[in-house]
Image 1 (tube, one colour):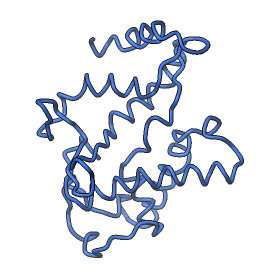
Image 2 (tube, one colour):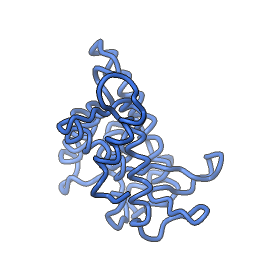
Image 3 (cartoon, rainbow, N blue to C red):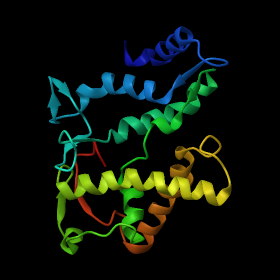
Image 4 (cartoon, helix red, strand yellow):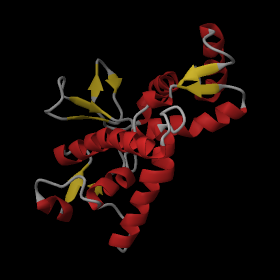
Length: 201
C-alpha cells in the first residue's frame, strides 16, 4: 500500500467489512495503517523486533517498559476524518484514538495546577523528549484528557458520540492551553522547556 492510496485502501476495507449502514472505517484502523506506513520516517527511535516504534518511549512504570503516544500520527488521523467524510467514507469509534499528548494540552494541565512537578526545578531546565518527566507528563495528559472529556460531557448533558474527544481537544483543551500560555509567557511557549527535533513537539 502506498501513502497516496490510503483512501482507496480504507474504502476497500470498509466494503470488505460490510458493517453497519453506509461505508465506514474505524478510527483505530486508520491509525494502524498510518503507523505501518509512516513508522520508518521517524529518526533514531526505539525499535522492537526490527520495527521502528516512532513516538514511543521507555518508562519504568509500564508493564513492558514502553509508553506509546504516536501524537503526530494520531493528529494526522484526526485531520483526515473530515476529508474522508467528504469522500463518502464515515469514520466511526473516534474514541479509539487518544487525546493528543502535546504541549498545548499538557501545558494547560500544568498551568492550571492540575499537574504539578514533583521537582520544581524541572521548569527551569531543558528536558529531552525521552526523559522520564516528559514521558510521564505526556502519559498523564492522555489520561486526564479523558477525565476532562467526561466532565465536559456531563456538564453539557451530551454523550461521547455527540461530543467526541476530538471536539473536546480542538474547541477546548488545545485552544485554552494556547491562550493561557500566551498570558503566562512572553513567547507563548509551554511551561516546560522541551528539547525536540520537531518530530514530537
